[in-house]
Image 1: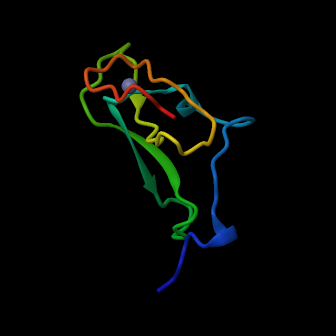
Image 2: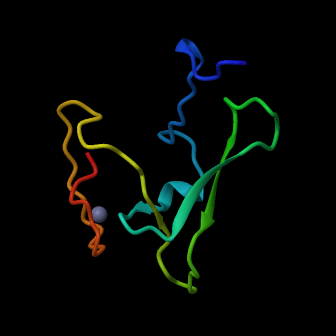
Length: 94
Ligand SMILES: [Zn+2]
């Protein structure tokens, strides 16, 4: 069985200098969009496309948002409060 996420083989998406419309979607603790890895160009599990799919009916003009799935404490010394205003808001992103 192949190991895919071993040591130096980890890939990270950094939208600092390049990105697409996905970079404009904000976080919500009650998102209407989900993220799915899709193999398009290759069957190499390390290189999926990151695709966004709506998980609810989205009306024209409605904000689309996804759950960043950050975990509090995953970035040492960094705290970001969540302001998504969802009824189930977890209160913090980091
Ligand atoms: Zn929230």
